[in-house]
Each structure stands twice: as structure tokens, then as C-alpha cells.
Length: 196
Image (cartoon, rainbow, N blue to C red; front, side, top):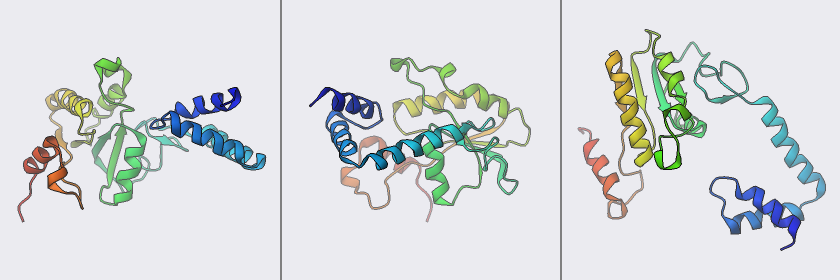
């Protein structure tokens, strides 16, 4: 592979979930596109990057400050759902089941990776909780070691304020197979069972 293609592949490799082979495949793909398509691709990214900012309330990515969700008077401002990443907000919004506000941490606690509380938007969350309209915080961090540690840490910080702290339900996904589920997922499914 020539040096220029390798440099392009290195840039793609910086994206989450992109391995060496995928990065090279993307580099070749982009180099085979007409120059106008590559220019349009880069222009769309540059244009979006120049218009997107962080909401000063929930720390989500937005094109306005405050974002459309935080400024929507029809939403339930007494509930804040805490997520790790901006894409989590999009996934929850697509379910059309949640109508409160959000708070984006921009990560999870991970001491092994050098990510501590000061690296997340925890201080901003605690500041929001001083508003007496907030009655419940729903923790929707990932059900992995880092997400669980983050939820536990936040619970310890929030509980003394008297605000109700809940955790999203976990368990077997729709269409899932119990025989292929890991023990943590099965434990969460049993723990979060509902009466029928």
C-alpha cells in the first residue's frame, strides 16, 4: 500500500470500531470515488462541525444552545435521564417512550484508562440537580463494568439530596435467545422482572 493511502487509512483508523482492514477498505473506497464526491463528503463534515455545539444545559451535541430538547416546554422537566454518549440520546428518542430531559456524561468512569469523575460532565449534572423541579434521575449508563461503576458513583452522589435515583431495566433483548445470553444479562433480566 502506498504511503498516501496508508496516511488516509490511519485517519480512518482513529474512528471508533474501525480496525486496520476496515480503515484500508475505506481509504481505497474514498480514493476510487470521483474527486467531486470526496469534496462533497469533506464539505458536509466541515459544515456540520462548524454548526454543532454542546448544549450548555444537558451537554448533548446540538445546533442550538440550549438544545431543542432542553428548551421544549412540553417535556417533563422533573426527570433527567443520564447517558454516556450523545448517540444514546438519539437511540432513546427514537423509541418515543421517554419525554423528560437528558444529561450526557461524555464517557464512563474507567480508572484503567485514566478517566475519572473530573473527565466527565458530572459537575454539570450536580449543578442541574440544585433546581428543585428535578424529582428523579434515571441512570442509563451501559451495563458493563465502567457503566455500572459510573451508575454506582452517581447514585452515591445524588441520593443524599433526596432526589429519586432509578436505573433503566436490563435483560434479554426482544428476539434474543436465553441460551446465548451471558450471566450478567440473565441476572439483570431476573432482577428486573415485571408482574404480568
